[in-house]
Amino acid sequence: PPPETKLKILKQVFIFLLLLATFSVLVSFLVLALKERVFTVRATSAYISADLRALRAPITGFFNPEFPLKPGVEIKKGTVVGYMRSPVFGSIVITSPIEGKLIRLNPSLPVVKEGEPILFVLPPGGRVFVKAFVPHNEGKGITVGKKVLIYDAHGGVFSGTIQRILIGIGKDLPETKGFEAFQARSPDYDTLIIIPEHRLDVSRIGEAVHVEITVYPRILKRLFGEDEG
Figure 1: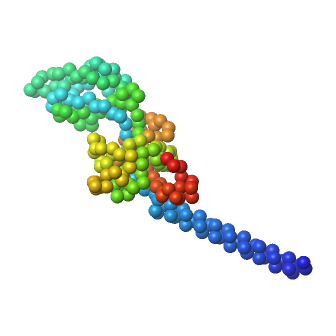
Figure 2: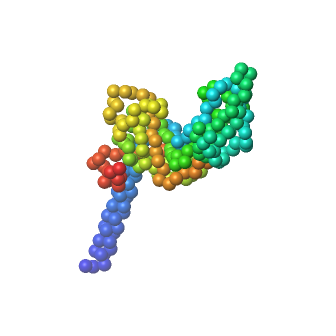
Figure 3: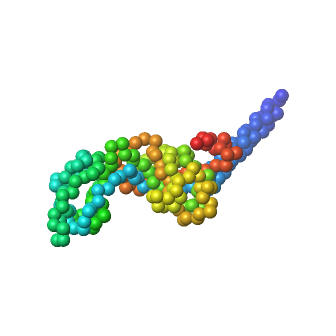
């Protein structure tokens, strides 16, 4: 063909490719916006927690430690950790019925009331996990085994897996593999217990984090590249 025809064809191909690229960018933007606005559930609040056990005061009084109690100290079962002193009961020796790594002390010490914790211990094999609270009416599609993204205050991002779902914010409420089984109940928030992909250091217990969960209809899982888990 003559040069003028070749140039015209090239212009048409260029315009077609430009339109195709523009259309692809627009579709990608719409897909991402759809994912962000429709299929992303954000926890209202979340923090790093652990399987802590508490040593509680048998009486109301003043607690005096037997040795310096600092986070990280290993406590053996049967160890004398201190004494409770009370005008009514006198002095009582406090021995630990639990063992593990000391995580934190009651901030109200040395004054402590009967039944209140004196200190918290992470027993051997205890887990550090993330506890997240999500609005109950946004929980449809959230199931045990689903992957989530966890963002910390330092800009770090790590993944985790939902291990348990507690209906409500209480620690002793029933569990389920999905929210649908409890449609008859309508608590404001529900609790997710999330196991991080990598073990977290005990020094991070109590740290606030941000949790995001993506929930897609089954038909869209392939489109978004979401695992069946």
